[in-house]
Image (cartoon, rainbow, N blue to C red; front, side, top):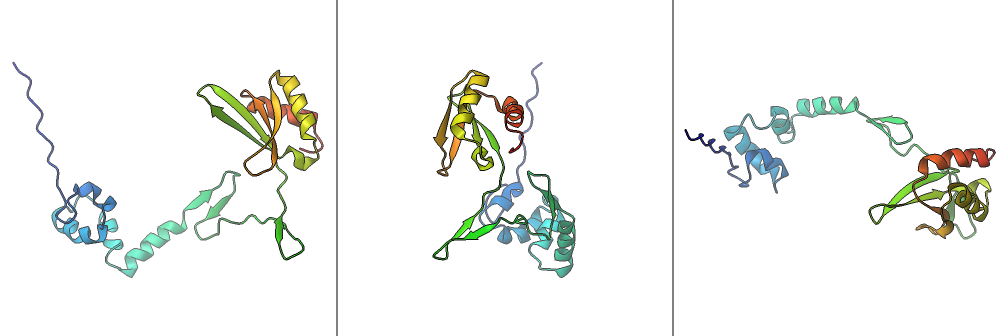
Length: 185
């Protein structure tokens, strides 16, 4: 009693690009494949996709546009923007320097990042503490003593000073910063 071998899957290849019909949209020229797909593989793609992007019918384009109007995008800070609204709603204060140069004023926020290096080693980076009038050297000493780790002030990739603390203390450092410097941050 030998087990029956499963039958091989029948794959329909596109006559234009040579890819399987399911992958034509990722091929070099989907627009040339659409007439062939409509004739030979009508069930592979939804009719809306094949018709709306090639035929140029105003009705189909209008339907797609109506669907997109209801879509909203949420950003990391929790604000949402509708489909027609611009995503750059944040305005930063700009200061004019001599010579016509513009200087953007930094937002006052503390950014805490956890960076993993060498598989198991972590470094917690605290940025923006100096914008609140905190001396970074004093803050790094306090962080090092509190969490019994090495902490140092280094220049980041944007040439701004930041505090690097060895270890993953990203959850505990928030409470420590708010308790130690309650007025600024």
